[in-house]
Structure formats: C-alpha cells, structure tokens
Length: 371
Image (cartoon, rainbow, N blue to C red; front, side, top):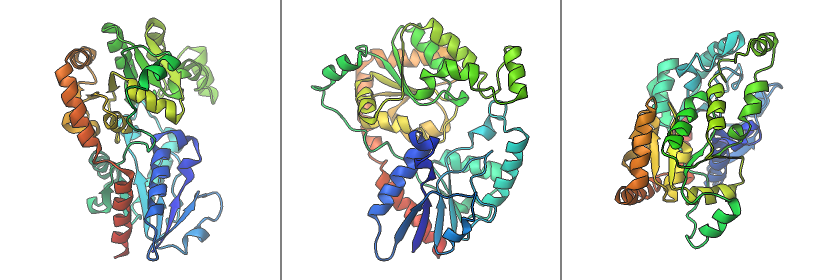
C-alpha cells in the first residue's frame, strides 16, 4: 500500500499549534510502521498547481488538515482520500467566527468535496458528532483517532525544578494555561478567577503575549476594518480581546511568557501547581493530556471533548460561571488529598494516549478503505 500524506501543517503557521503537532507526530510514527507492504510519501500538498499528478500513483492520499472557510481540499478529490478534521468550532460559534461571503461559499464547496472522501478522521468522539451534524456525512465513514501529548513532554526530577524556577523567575505556586486566545478558549474567565483567589496565572503562547497589538492592528485588512477603527469597534472574531486586554491591565499576577521553546515549556508544565483549561469548546485539548502526563492536577471546563480526554482525573466547572471556576480552583489548591488522587488518576489516563497508537489507528483506516 502506497500512501501520500500532507506535511503542509508542519511548515505553515500551524506548525506551533495542535494541527502542526498532529501532522508532525503522525508522520514520524507512521514512518516507524513502514514495511514492504506499506510505504509512505511525505509531501506538502499544493493546490495552486496541478497537484493531481502526484496523487495518481498512490493507494491512499491523506489530507492532514481541513479548513472550513479556506480552501484545503482540491476540487477533484483523489480517489481513496482520507481527511482529518480537528474541530468544527467556527460553525458552533458563527457570530464569533464569521466566514464572510467568500468563506461561506468556500464552506459550501468544501462540504460537497468532503462527502467524496473515502474516510474522515476525527480527533475525538465530540468532533465526530460535530462532523456528522454539520455535513450529514455517513457516520460509518468517520473514524476517531485520539491525539496525544507532544513527544518532548516528560516528568522532570523534583531536584532539578528549583533551579529552573529561579532561572525563569516563576512564582512558587501558579495556575498554568497553554494555548491561544480565541473566543472559545474563554481566557477572560480564567484571568478573573485567578485574580479573585489571588494566585499567579502563567500563560504560554505567542498570541497572549501580543494580544494588545493584535487587537488594535490585527483586524485592519479592508475598508470595513478601517471604519471599525474609526468608530472604536472590533471585528467579531477578535471583539472578545477587548475584555481580555482590560483584564490583563487590571491583573498584576499574570505572567505572559509568549512562545517558549520545548524544553522550557516542559519545565513549566512540571512546575505548575494546577493546569486549567477554561474553554467553552474544544476538539480535543492536547495541553490537558500534557499536564496529566507529568503529574499536574487539571481543572477543566465541563465540555464534551475535555471530559472525554481527562475522564475522572479532572475537576470540572461551568465555563459560563466564574464563581464556579473560583470554587473549583480553590478546592484543588487547598485539598492535598484531592490533588494526590487527581495526579494518580491523570497519570493513569495519560498512558492511553500515544502517537504510536494514533499512527496504528490511522493505518487501520488506510487498510479499511482498501478493502
């Protein structure tokens, strides 16, 4: 079986996000499974040229990223195509992620093309349900292959951590958040909650460090955006950032570290007192798996995908209720027995996630569409 797989997400802006991590780790682990009966061709698919020619010699063509409002599939989808979809969040929150005229046209085109795929891979049961809901695709064509945590994430000896804490100038106790500042991430609630219980919040991610610049200038792309600037309004996709900027300005205990290299991020996960994922919605929630894998207690919004990923190891709260988040964070921070049980359960659950398993499950999908 000859497989062509898209490495594009490892080279684009997705490279430092979950989509890029997925493509990178999947490709690396599929390489390990190569044999005489199975070969892998890694290629950054390009639809601007006649890329159909590179597909004709393969039994399976795997598109590793799907975009709702932008072109991510060729008009003539190759036979035996597999498409990975990470989430359908823009369709769940249309007011906050407006596609515009062009984007909505692209979505209708992409949806028709998607139905021609032999198989679709979802990263969670939650995403599978959303795919079926918004595309009306046969459920039997949609297969779930869970993600894992990034391969550099590991448990670090406690003897090493004090030196690292001093080097990074981090507080003795803190809540950690890793990720973007999109609307669905609900970061404002987390900042408010940490301020109320007077505990430092450490945020890792480029967008949070640059949010002031992004909110003021990032939306200026056309005439309507210039009008928004004149009337001091915001594009719907970044309107929530106004509140986030205000919370950052009021909070003295927020450490916005920006993008951090792998080794540093690994240390921060190990140093965190609690990891919190406050999202209204997620497709999977990779940082949750990462935190569990190093023995950091996790407090999560009670949303489908996060419950699916963390199971009984996490303490859950209503993402629309800041006081509930305050209560749950306080409970975990103050109850050592609860923390100990959460750590044990989290380590146990994290063992079921591995990129090797993701690759094996993906290979099963390849084999299935060949029958």
